[in-house]
Length: 256
Ligand code: NAD
Image (cartoon, rainbow, N blue to C red; front, side):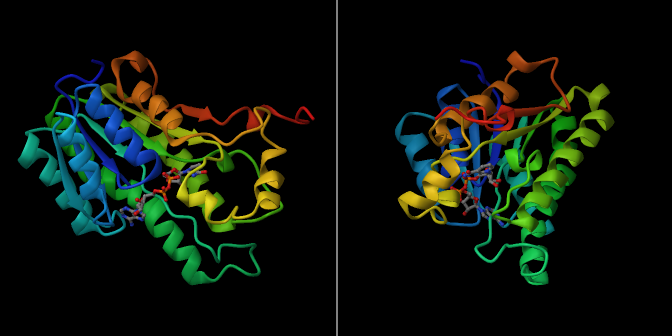
């Protein structure tokens, strides 16, 4: 078991990557604090408990300071410590577009969840990791932090760039404290977040032509990479961006 005796807090644990990571981390021995704005996070906890694991649900909005403080406090109250902080919750707004057409409200909401949410997780989580003698922080960025697209989602793309640069600086600041901070950069996945936009075979095909592997990733494949970053297997890794993207960022031309 790669995470025996560890306590892991995972945000966005009701769905997609967060859900799969919560189930996987629990199977690897972690006690899991499943955080989500949706009460469906309770189902994640029930699934873990049914399989014999330990988990606790905290309904919280990661963009609100009092919620972020409470989720960390709950981890320490219920399980006594915090070792792994997976800042994974994120949104992609339907009205996110180019500079001309993206509203300030959409920009602000995207940055509140995707960037401030990570900041607040660290603001309250890092003192808890210090109390535990160190730990691992994983921030979910995206392949879009590396590549631009003509089908724009400017606020989302900029927010993930911010997650990447924030991750590097956090890693350097806390490197001597046994706290590692890495960014996980998934490629396009078959999760709710993306599939609600790619809702026709034509739209899906338009994205698939750019992925050398010719398919979307699965949330479970990203959870495996998160497990690597959470576990001692990545003990000399900090400030890194781990791309798990089916080759999309390596490609200039993809196979027919
Ligand atoms: P998802 O929509 O399946 O899950 C996201 C979860 O976050 C949901 O359960 C949602 O309720 C929760 N959430 C949203 N706002 C929240 C808030 N303010 N506070 C707490 N929880 C909140 O999406 P996913 O694909 O699993 O995405 C997880 C992360 O991966 C996100 O940061 C996303 O940007 C990133 N990502 C996704 C893809 C993709 O193609 N799906 C690609 C690259 C990166």
